[in-house]
Image (cartoon, rainbow, N blue to C red; front, top):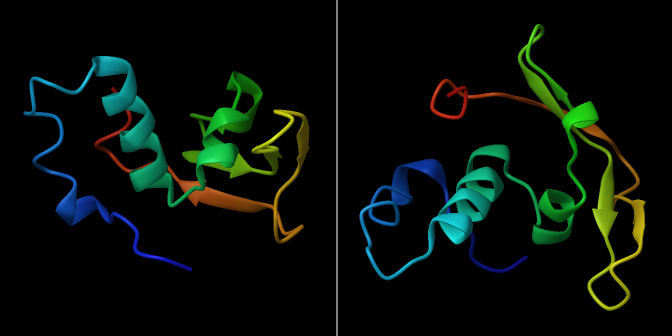
Length: 87
C-alpha cells in the first residue's frame, strides 16, 4: 500500500477553510476507522454499533461501477469507535 493518513497527522485538516465540511467528514471517517475510500462509501447506519462501540467494515463500493461488494481482503473487521468520532 501507499502512504496513508493516521489520526495524529489528521489535526490540520479540520482547520483548513478551503476544504468542504463533507470532505472533512469523509477524511475523518477514513482516518479514524483505518478504512479505504470504497469502504467508507459503503458504510451505512447498520454498520455502526454504538452500544458496543464499533463500526463493522464488511462492504466496499467498487471504484469503477460503484457496486457494493465484499471488502477487498474478504475479511470483515470490527473497528473500535474512537472517542473523537462519537459526537
